[in-house]
Length: 79
Image (tube, rainbow, N blue to C red; front, side, top):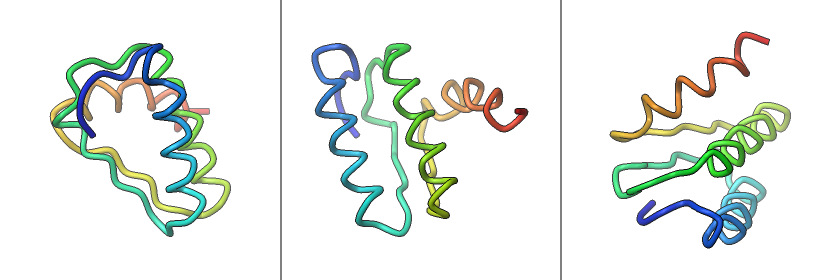
């Protein structure tokens, strides 16, 4: 992934990832090229992670921003 995930790109970001999750057995996002991600982008990732769990698909986030995102995901795994 590259660029910014913000209100200007959020809809395209969500649609693209939903499509990939629908047609792939697993999805790995490399966040190295992402310059910024806002709270709404994090929320989309959480929602897609939940969808992947319910459909038994592997969903991974890697790269330099993954630690920041992982902290937000801990609340999902704790529930």
